[in-house]
Image (tube, rainbow, N blue to C red; front, side):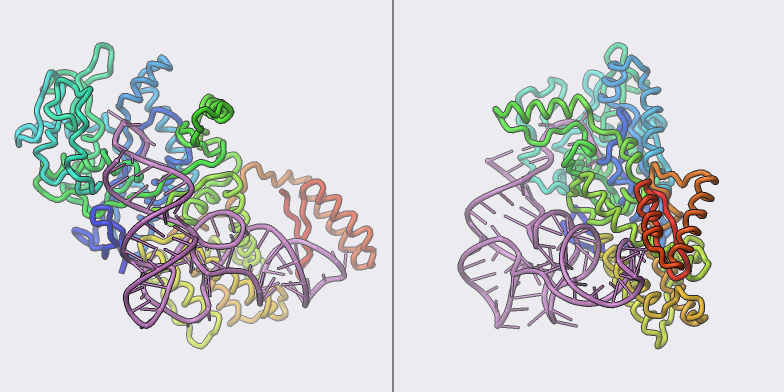
Length: 514
RNA sequence: GGCGCCGUAGCCAAGUGGCUAAGGCAGCGGAUUGCAAAUCCGCCAUCGUCGGUUCGAAUCCGACCGGCGCCUCCA
């Protein structure tokens, strides 16, 4: 049974969809006014993984990620760039799409645009006015906070702290904490026609309108970053439940926020605590800021999408995660253990790890280990992985089981001497293959080990380079045969200087570039 | 000020009442290797501090110390 931590109740609850086997998930997506940074990738990767795991568990999952393509920040940025808002949105959306694709995020079913749902939005606002939850005021429309009895139930804040501090309150509002459903357009601003005059939607209403249009009045999981709990999600609940009289999302899942601890990962231009009066650190802050938050696309030049994905999944999604280049390099080193095993598997069996027919459904991945000690352990580790994932998608714990799995498979190849063809037999190879297939099956639920990964900037060289290397290897093999180790080492060291690694194995010498 | 989160080995991190506290990175010792690389084996933590509850706590409660978040349209 899968259990999910629900922000609404602050507990882990058994996952029981509203209308099984269907599961609807709505994730708050990006406001497309600037290139995405690593922080924007956390949600997509996590919920991509959540969908994969739920689908693997037998659910029929629909995952929606909205694109906010009209908003104050977009208006400001498009003015600053002297570019139409729609064009800016288009460019930044394209950047976002490239980035999530590089991370292997490709199970999102729909990316609704706010601007494409104006009718739904306006309908919802009208409905709220009709029901007495909202009021029009000089071209704006506000939600009347005092009408939502349960306001504050998600963020668990006492009502009196949510009623605003007064001062600076817009004249048009009844209560300081009332929030805009519709904002009238100032001259020159992009606008849409509405019963209250030309304007644009407030920030919160689009999610209520689009989730309702695509997933219905009540759906299963609503996700987003922890920073959205208040006010955004609190307001969504107020809007949707007031408009429909039905429960909105059943489970609220919030991911922890990325903390940048070096320049590459700098999030949103946020400063890492510049102490008061500390000129040096303030200067540093300015430099960082002027350089801007690093675009995620830059990071992809240094690391593969799979490495970054593995990094994001290596800890629990609710925990804040520290980003640094060193951190990512560490997980990359760990990932390489898997890649080496995949190559080894292919050397031993002649079969590509990536073409193993892994089960896509949990029940199909079950197998009878019989008396085989290897398969018994494989089955245990599989169970451990699933147990971790069942417990609120604990991918960090699951990855631990994966490392154990690859180790026992390596050990099996060692102990059974499977790298030597003479020592192979069909039964042992079948056991190894079952273990590798399980490894792939579990990796796929995390969205990893799908296809061979090429490290960014890796250069496998031309055909000529390949042939030259083969020649060097052949010469060296002969030298080793003749016990001319000085020559053998000279070749290996010389190639190492050029970035080519030679490894001597039972079946011959293997070379890799990079 | 209000609400909340976190503090597990050198670094990262799983575990949230009971077997020997997962796993990764780094390090050390060993097997293997002509030597390496890779792989495997072994070593490396009593869980921020203090107090309490309990037969029993890293896990529950309290205080304190230390990090951090939100309350201001950042995912």
